[in-house]
Image (tube, rainbow, N blue to C red; front, side):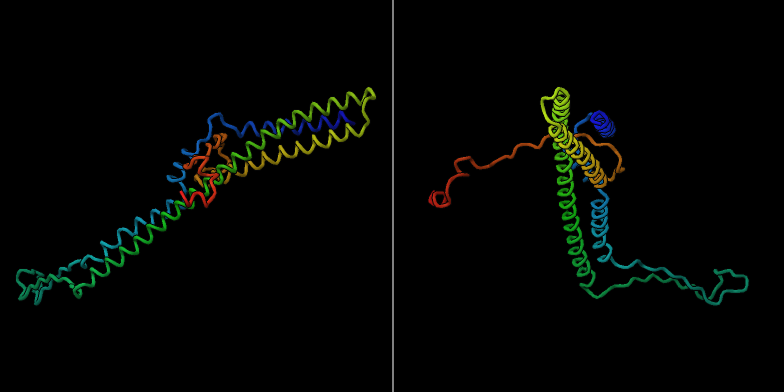
Length: 245
């Protein structure tokens, strides 16, 4: 019975491990590269930039004069349709001139609206960058959790084998073996859960980068240590002493 359980667990681990290996790539995933790709390919950000580019062209259009019109009329044309022998050939060139200041005011209004659209594009970029960073570090955290659970699984597998051998020699009761099997099963479930979390975070990150959801991603790099501008002494100083200084 115990051998059957171990066989099922080993099969599950092999399947999960093979799926995880197929999803891995050797190149590390750098945050700077991810952000550069997001700025270039994110569909929401590209749409916002296109709206800003289109709005920037509107002020020149609304402040310009209407196109001039050219007309020609021929009166009393003979039956031979020889326009050179018509009694009157009238040529007209017309241009609409709006009330002074209307075109300039329309151009200023369009410039303000274009500025608003441009600021909206900047806001979209900030939102996209924040979302990419959050998803990137979610992926990093899932990888770190998986490494921990994999090491824990290896230790529990050894413990389970040791418990079974000692149970076979009568050194420990059967409850120790069952307890080891339960802990091993929990760890296997955690490994599977983290692999699913990696797949989910990878799909979300691929969507932000306008890539196919199944495209493989590398393991994110380690998060850099925080850069503190203040000295440790200044950080632990009391507010009253800081105010006096």
